[in-house]
Length: 336
Image 1 (tube, one colour):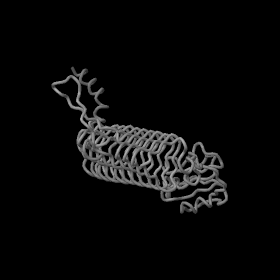
Image 2: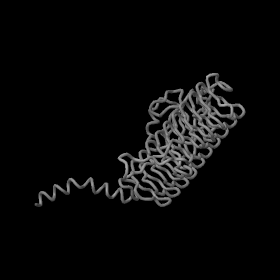
Image 3: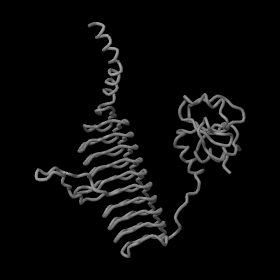
C-alpha cells in the first residue's frame, strides 16, 4: 500500500500533514477522490485545494495552499517531474508477448535474435535482420530485410521498419510507426505527361532512447540517410521527410510535417501542426509555436510563430494589428 509518507520519500519532498493517508492512484485536482493523489504546479489552481475531495496533493515549492485539517501536501521542486515518478509506481503491469517467439511469427533463417526477446503473434522478421537483446515485438510488427534494432526496444503492433534501416537501444515505437518508406521524390519529364519517380535508395538511422508516437512516419533518404538523434521524442502522426537530420533531444508535437532535407539541431522544440519547408535549418534550442508555417530558417535559441513563421514578437504585433483591422476599416469608411 502506498501512503503519503512513502510517496514523500519516493519524490524527495517535504510533507505537511499526516504521513499515513492511503493512496490508490492519481487524478486531476478537480476529479480526485479521497484516496487519490492530485498535483498543483500552477498557483492559479491553488484555491481549488480548499474544496477538493482528495486529501493529498503534490505541489510546487513556493505555492501557498489554503490550510486543511487532516489533509497532506507534499512540497517538491517540480510537481510535474515528481508526478512522473508517482505514475510509474501506480502504472498497471503491461501485457507483454510471451517469452521467445510466438508460433505464428515468421522468422527468416538468416535473422539473428538476441537473448530474452519476446516476439508476438504474426510478426515478420526478414532476411539478415538483427534484433538486440531484450527486445519486445508486439503483434504484427514487420522488420524488413537487413534492418537492425538495438537492445531493449519495444515495438507496438503494426510497426514497420524498412530495408536496411537501423534503430538504437531502448527505443519505443508506438502502433503503426513506419520507418523507411520512400521519400516523396518526383520530377516532371517534358517527354511524358506523368511525374517521374526518383529512386529513394538511402536509409533511416535512429539513435538510442528515441520514442515515436503512433502513426509517425520517417522517410528514407534519397541516397544518404535520414537521421534521428539520441533522446528525440516525436509525437503521433508526425511526418519527417527524406534526408532530414535531427540532432539529439529534439521534441516534436503531433501533426507536424517536415519537408525533405531539413536540419533540426539539438534541443529544438516544435509545437503541434508545424509545417516546415524543405532545406531549412532550425537552430539548437529554438522553439516553434504550434501551427507555425516555416518558410525560413530559425536561428538558434529563438522562438518563432505565425504564418508565415517569424520571430514571436513580430508575429504577436501582426496578430494584434489584424484584430484591430475591422475597426480601422470602419473608421476609414466613416471618414470617407
